[in-house]
Image (cartoon, rainbow over the protein chains, first blue to last red):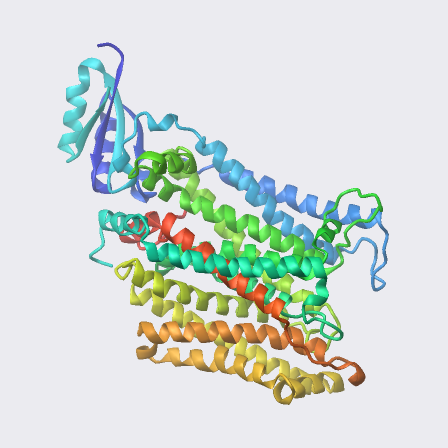
Length: 168
Length: 438
């Protein structure tokens, strides 16, 4: 049987995952990903992950929202020049409230777009090499190896105290 | 909380999603009947006209606006618990955050119905939408009522998205423990979430931004609601303290509703190990704090009326304490400020029965607070010959009953079909004592 083999080590403790990740780094096996029921700071630190770019989407949405809110209020006032209580047609203070609400609304839309594009959801591809226990009490470390190296990879996971799942 | 494990948390929450018993459906049916009563009353009003309600000169704003403010207020503690306490890393929020967020979403939906109901000719709402219409009319964004449209619709959108984002890992957990049609439904709802480290990396960051954006939003929304009144010149309404006063009142009533919902939920779903007495005690302590803020606001209003030497204001507040609606005023002071002070006694705030009873009392008092403010202002305005009283009609009572039934109907359906406690955040509490943040 040719090609890469996907093997998952399932652990009940984050510290076991951290030590497995260190061992994998030293080995010739290819680390794929960790599935966990919680966002683990220890695992994130062990993987030395970069800061997410979601915030840029949020910021862009917020700026767009502020401009849109103001622009909408100004446009409506200019289209229908109704003087209320002697206030100017373009009244900045009341229009700031509209701008503020739109800032939040569009920033949240930006946040959602950022989340969906960065996490690549909705997508069911990630479920092909996934174990349902990873949403319960297990942390799953997925790695690949050549067909002839499976025993070594299994051994690595078992030494760290993990259960093995081999994907055919 | 120390006996909890990941597996026991999953099991406790998943047990709540087991096939409902017959009495559950009986409760759902009774609540639905209440919803139908409300819908029938509203339909009748649409056909007959807004005169079917008791609003008339001088009190043109009655229970529809009282209930609007009441439900928006209820909605506020959900965001306080899910966003503000999240930013403060208050771990005790985790067991109740999901139910409070759900409460928020349903309460905003119900609050959003009342301006439509109050409109009478409900189809005229299209004039509030900025689009090029035949009459060349555009919405007037100087009006606080337009601020309200924007604020409430933003709040509904943001709180719904925040709620769903928080649900995502739990929906995946249920998907992984289901079979058949339920599995298909939860597979669709969880959008392929697998808890991969790359997903968590972006999720935690996004969730933090959600919380950071929801926090100023929640404060702005009830401030905007208060400006519906404060930007008018009506005595009793035209005051600068309304924004913080309303925000504190909203959180006060919302926290009380959290206790009202959580205490039966805790008992029925056997959540005692998850929603511990400590959690309920912390909610009670926060209620004391918000109760003191609203009490301070009540006193400040009287002080400023006296200090202003404004005869109309002085008369408005004299009448508030000794006039026709004095009972409403006594209810609000007693129920919102004085009775919650009983929570200063440890025995009271750690006994589930007293917590539940006082939460109901605060809900009652907060409804009366809105009555006193809204009806009291317009009933006793500038001209003595235009003073008048107001009593709700049976149609208004029917719609009010419908709104309460709709809220509990939606919540009861949710509690049995979705995870009413966040499994993910409870597991994080075991690990870090906090909640998912970047």
